[in-house]
Structures are given as C-alpha cells and as structure tokens.
Length: 252
Image (cartoon, rainbow, N blue to C red; front, side, top):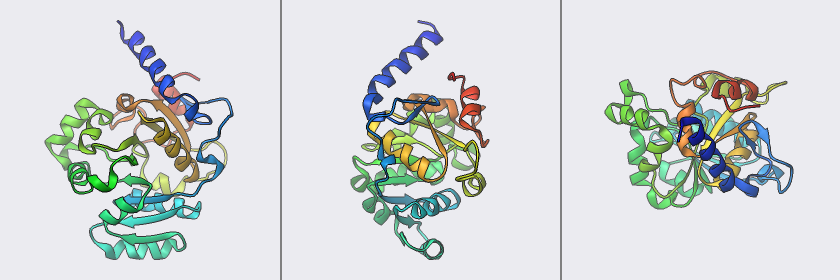
C-alpha cells in the first residue's frame, strides 16, 4: 500500500470513528452537515488547567469570559492567584491535583519533560477525562525523551505519558502572543488544528476552541498530530483555516 492509499484509509477510519458525534465540527476544514450541535449549543463546563503559564493562563481567561468555570494551577500558587483575581468571575486558583480533580475537561500546558510526572501523579484524577495537550517536545529543554517523542510524533508519544485519558492534541501550533491577541478577531479566525481518537473528546475540544475565539480544524486521529508538530509547515504561525488546509494538504 502506498503512502497516499494509507493516508486515505486512515482518513476513512477516522471519519467512521467521528461519525455523527462530531456533527458541526470542522473536519479537515469542512463543516459536517448541521445536526446534533456539539456543545456549541453553549454548555458551560468546569475546566482544570495544569500549567497556567503563558498559554494556559491566556486560555483560562478566554474560557472564563465565555462562561466556563476555570481552575488555574501551578506549583507556585502566588502567580496563579493573582491571575485568577485579574480574570475575576468564574476563575480561581489551586494546586495541579485540585485542577485535575476539578475539571470535567483538563488542559495540560507544561514543559514536555513534565508530562510523565503529570501522568503518574494525577492518574486517578485524570482517568477517563478529555485532556487537551498543548505540550511540545523541545530536545534542548526537555532532553532525550523529547527527541524520542519528536521521532514518534506527539500524538503517539503523549498517550504513553498520560495513560487512561481521552487525549486531544490542541493549541500547540500558535504562540501565546497569538492566543492573547488574535482571539475573536474580525474576519477569518486563526485556526487551531486538533487530533484525537475519541469523538466526544474532540467535540468538547471543538467547543473550547470556538469559545476561546478561534476556528477548530479536526485533522484526524492522534497519529496525524505529527502533521502539525514542531518543525512542520503548520507550526508556529497564526494561520486561517484555509491557510492551514493548504499547509497540511488536506483539501478544501
């Protein structure tokens, strides 16, 4: 089987998985037919954020303003308490364990080398939950494990560090500056590529991308997250959905 055939087969299998549960999602940049709307109908959620730095903190603010309850966390509670106070209503601070327990969905935004400890320390609290993983492996910072993750692709590597969760790769391609400044912009919104194997987790991720002020583009299953990993043409740029489709060569 050639590479193109394998790619088509992977896409067919993913579409079967997503099915009706992903109604309303942008799949490879194309909307499904309207039907049962995903949480885009507006259900407010409890979101735990493990790692409330530049990316996690910015997203926490967007989500709180969209009406979600957010628990921001870090090992040093001083800065996150200040951030929660600045965000105001719907945001509070706590420990990473409290964030893992609080969230019906959890965002993990930490240095990639910290993922194994997150998976070990909070396994019970995270089990079975949708988890959005923003973490990028950077060998000069994270060491050999990052190089191994880059070789495998993060969509394959990260589930090994976060076992038992319903993982979605999300918010890893754009800078924190773009997350802060480009949310809800007029015209074509900045696209956020998503990859996951669980249709319901993807549906939730789609809503949260939209609520943060961006346009979700579901690329496929976790194995396809490699297509927007660090160093790819889709990485590090605030692209529109149209531009992202072109970079990923996933059609119009």
